[in-house]
Image 1: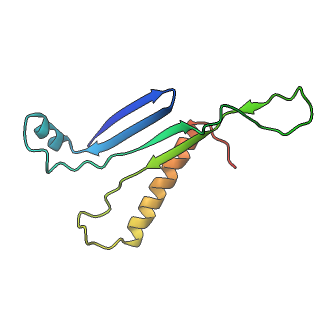
Image 2 (image 1 turned 135 degrees about the vertical axis):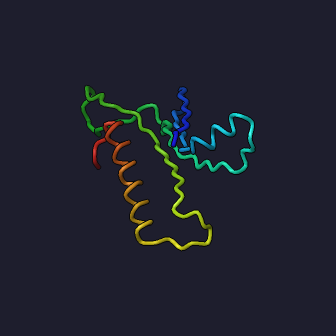
Length: 118
């Protein structure tokens, strides 16, 4: 399994998009074979400014209080194949696995961005 990834950063957004791909499948496509049977489920996230350049962190009557900080909007999208059959019902184990994956992913992102709880 390989992970194909693309990322972009500019003054308006930062984003990361990635997808796991089957090595044999991607190698056959690279040699000119039909790509219609290759399953790609992209996932990723983006971070954009919240539109406020800065805002007060603390309401104060003192003029020397100048603490400000801009905010961001974080959006995440995950695609996960739990069963190859489109008519299959989700099992409790599948739901637990997806829940754990999403929770772990969000926790790792919060840690890497040094976000505080709250």
